[in-house]
Image (cartoon, rainbow, N blue to C red; front, side, top):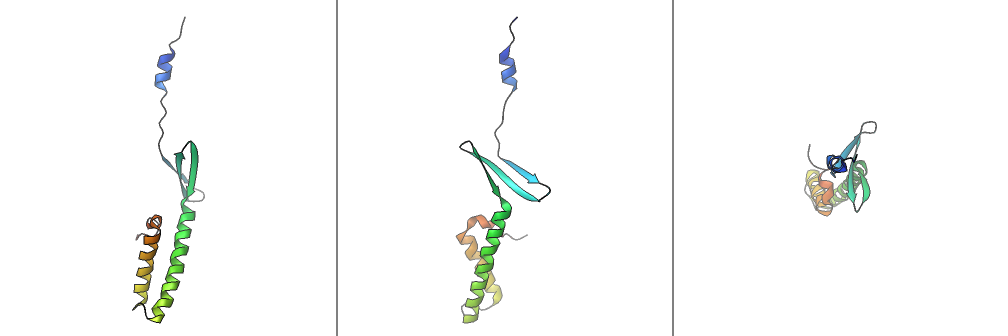
Length: 99
């Protein structure tokens, strides 16, 4: 008796899809991509903190320039800071968007 291996092989199909995993204990989202058969994991928390640090430094710098007379109000200095950061680092757009 011979077994039919063709049917067994056709039933097993593997799907390659980008996946997003959520870790409940830390509340941190990780995105997993398969690039050249090597998995790369990026932590969203790390990117978020870097963008916020850059923004706070830029706001401080623009506030000093506001005191020198470059900007009319603190609100204008903050708005310019946001636009400068988003122009220099487009990946920060997701982190710094309005809620």
